[in-house]
Length: 409
Ligand SMILES: Cc1cc2nc3c(=O)[nH]c(=O)nc-3n(C[C@H](O)[C@H](O)[C@H](O)COP(=O)(O)OP(=O)(O)OC[C@H]3O[C@@H](n4cnc5c(N)ncnc54)[C@H](O)[C@@H]3O)c2cc1C
Image: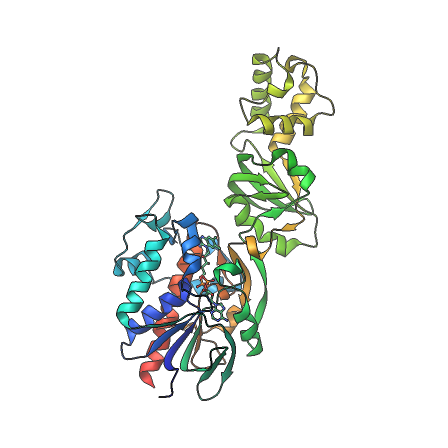
């Protein structure tokens, strides 16, 4: 065997690449397996997940939580249990009561340690500080890098998307795959804050509100999500915004808006009744305090100013038709959507290697011996552990299939 030559070479040492390596080596212990990683260490992004707590799976893994042409690939991972995989690495996982699965110690570092320890135990080589810059398909795969060439009988592409390139995934692997004739759906930021007119959010900077968030295109509702909206510098953020942010890509030629229902559990008439009671209770106070028992003061004042051209001297002077106008704003506080905060603020990348390039073994149809896993595929999930679950499970299955092929040859 040539120097730098492997039975299975994994390109990218993130969640999917490390799972692929472990699974490959467990399937065929004789196979030589290595992971090539452009950063100085593997798994950097894992450390940032779930605010350092690593939400690695969910009790409700099903296709309704995934987007992209690759959603059909989920059936190939349905038999794989990510919590069981981590149990086999000695990591105890638990459901947080909302279906989100975390390591019990809530530490992303212990998840990464467990993966690295298993790689070391199995004799998997880690080749860091090495960016793959090109792939040639000869009688084996020839992987180019500034540190020289590597040779592999089987290659697993696990290079991630373009999100948060400081954590590793810079999109270079997508370009390399396109060069091999692999069809790529144009990448776009997903699970990302949405941009709005800065003047609209400036008075709300730093505010948060539990709400229903509706994404509208050309005044029609496309999707609704529930959770805490966060208002920051020119951006609308929070998990409920992240989960529908991909719709901007699909509707970006249209008039896009976010309509926020600030009291989603109440009907319009219930809101009006609530406001009339609040008016009676606070009748002698300045209108600035009218809504401060329902919303934060800043949000209450913002709502009033949106609804009324001129504020009366006291709350008691707010008329019934003003109440109707205030209630309409509370039920549909509207912001134009002018873009996303971009790849460097996105948690995942939409687009990527198209599903019809992939066979049932996570292999590239027209390149025998080349497999793909993780976020580089045209699939992403909602917030809640869906993305790591897919990265680990697709990685494990691609690794197993590469090892089965390696053992046959
Ligand atoms: C801040 C943040 C928080 C998140 N939190 C969660 C969460 O709690 N739960 C969840 O489910 N998902 C979460 N995600 C998403 C999840 O982390 C990713 O979907 C998942 O890590 C993707 O794994 P991957 O292995 O496919 O890609 P990546 O983790 O991106 O790994 C790809 C690896 O390939 C390497 N690489 C790329 N190109 C090359 C090259 N040319 N040569 C060599 N190496 C290369 C990169 O350096 C990188 O290490 C979060 C993402 C972010 C950014």
